Amino acid sequence: MINTFKKPAASFSKCLLTSAFAALSCSVVVAITPMTAVAQEAEAPSRQFGSKSGQVVLTAQEQMASDQWSAALSTLSQALAIPELNPYEKSIIYQMQGSSYYELNQYPTAIQSFENAISAGGLLPNESSALRLNIAQLLIASDQFARGAQMLEDWNRAGGQFKPQHIEMLWQAWSQANQYSRALPWAERWFNQANPKERKHFDTLNYMYNNLNMPAKQADIVKQMINRWPQDKTLWDAWASMLANGGREQEAFEVSKMLYLGGAYSSEQDLSRVVQYYSFYEMPYQAAQILEREMNAGRIQKTSEKLVQLSNLFRQAREYKRAIPILEQAAASSNQAKLYADLGEALYNEGQCEKAEGAFRKAMDRGFDQGKAWMLIANCRYDTASAAPRLDCEMTDAQIEASPRNKGWNHAIAAFDNVPASSRERSNATKWKSFIKNEKQGFLDRCQFKKDVVKEGCFQDIALAYDNVFLAGEFKLDDEKCEAFKAEYDSLYRINLGDTEDDG
Image 1 (cartoon, one colour):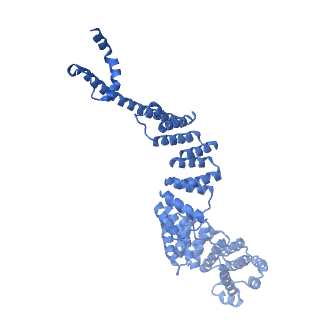
Image 2 (tube, helix red, strand yellow):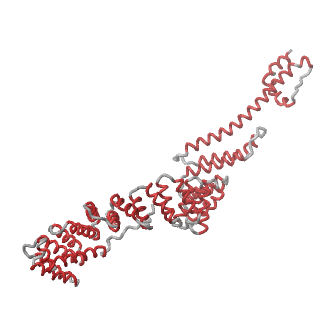
């Protein structure tokens, strides 16, 4: 499956958190200003700084305002060492400490400081909530994706209100944690709330559905993308791939065929896939035409492997004449036994037995199975014999022996004899020899039967002619050809009778 979505960057922008920490610093200014502290004394004694701690924290705030983060941390450590700090003082000091650590890119210690600020118990619920949001974002920024995403979800369940960037952050974080099932609801929500929807929104859902093996939903989103960006070939490829993976190979083939005919394919990989599709759907001739065309155009390399594929396609299409020169070229360039055997088989199918035998002999010289090769040579010789003029019973024995058909039979038997005794084909070779010998003997037996029928008829005519001598006064045969059998008849049936007549 080709994904058009790219994973988000490993860390989020530092700017995403800066505004929150700036607001936090402002709240500190208000909290520790002496006038404000006096005003708050009656209302909320637990949310004010003492004079000693207040002066130290003011110094730290001034250092932070001047980007003196390390110095501020040292000052804040002094503040934390002041005995009997109230919870509010501790919470504010920890927050400032966390902000300083953050600016120094010391995320783990920044996170710990913020968590300490919450644990100190001096923050109002809304302040703790805002800080939890910052902690969650900082966890994600420091590559603690699952922990940060979980905290962000918890913050939302506790009443925190999501903004669009929070939803985007959630699906990205869960994705980075490879927990796509947790990421999907947020990605879908991000998609649904987007207005207008951009390519990145579609790419995200396509990526999610692919990783979660949800072909139906992925197909739906890809169809929407194709409607919006019909010129994007990667989308069509993705669509064809989904169809194939979903058991809809015929539709996938139609999509690929449409793209090929429309000129969308130019890479060797795409073109080769189209060839494979045509071959798979039992259209070897069309597959061969495409492969040959693209090889001639140089868009598919004319390697030995591709030449073999092309010849195989032509052979599957029974276009042996077109396969032969390709196989000759492939065999000569690779010098492989299998290719010479394939060439021999193609020549065999075209009835070019002498050339086929030459190719098979080269194949055997290079290690090809002798049993298979001699069986094909013998079969080709037998086919040649069968195509010769038929034998005739009027032929003499010498003419039969000298006939092309009889010589072809003998030639085929000699080839079958060459099948090695150790070959699996030996049994078939023996059966073929018996078949050829029986075929020849069958012809001779039929001729003999015809001769016997004629002779028996003439014997009956001769016997009848002898019976009519008394009435006709002479021996007379109606069929002159029966004269040839009279001597044999007399030797069998008249010799004793003749001796008796002479004695009389």
